[in-house]
Length: 443
Image (cartoon, rainbow, N blue to C red):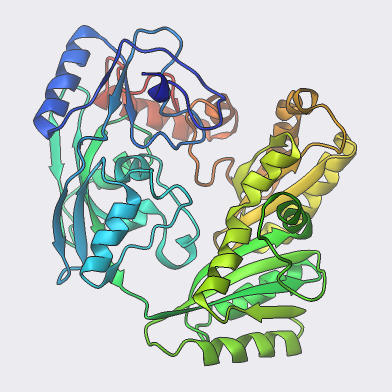
């Protein structure tokens, strides 16, 4: 059972009575009914790729891990209604491949898509790099099927785009991290498949320029803006130092970069993007840009972005923050948070990167050069207090896309509106009166 009892960052380890792997919804229902009757805690788990410990049992050994990996059928693909119905254990990559087989596109995009599952994606309301164009997992879902704590099944699968028949239970269960119900299947939205993409690395002197370019990019002159990822120079330098095959994408060196990608629904996608970036440089919204000339170069640009966490890991200890602020506040937030953490922890190296297009910044901190890793990581609570204090000032969120789990449970209690917390507890009590569903997580 060892692989089910710890999470990828090794921050949380647990014990369990057993790992249960239902193969049918009926088996899932019976398992929950038995656990509810017996008062046994149930920890739902998908691909075990979560980063906040929401899928990890506690140390008591009195809970079960409920793995959804064998509920892994694609029940239906309907290109006419642009939907796919998949069970919770289907991986994100499998859903994307199935959509492509009928010339459709499922836009949720995560680095772990080969192993993360649809159930886990929905339980955590996964985001990723394409939220700016398509929204998060909640926005990509039309209906769900879910098992309640007592084993009853909510049969809410639907292909309807319009349905005003009461509370939206799908949106309630999505993002609840398995504390209200166990999602067993979902009907997801599909989209027309892009015929071409234009991908560029852009250099900036400051984040204000990046904000201006983002505003221009949303206008659609170069196609549908699918991604706008910011990268500081220090992140590029770490990748150049630690990741084989990474190259400096521009001739000059700039404090900030952005990976910008447009989707086109015609095969000719390059001319509009070339003109767009030329105009941006002429008007001062960018300093330089390199447009990918091949699929290989596009892959190289994305590899630079995706290897930042690994490069940080190889550099030493890293204190991580998954936060969001209003998009127009990003330059001020990054500058203020950087100034405060550098004053509090001499030599710390801020590495803020991520999804500027939707306001989600991974404000990570690499340890000072020559510092001891464990000594630096022991200052995580201090760094949290500083960064989250700035987030609060700008009316942001302490968890943009990774969820709450165990890691941020106490922080949620300290930062969430008390009335909202009361409502959340009331909903939890109504749906799970014995508290068996993912105990100790989120609330």
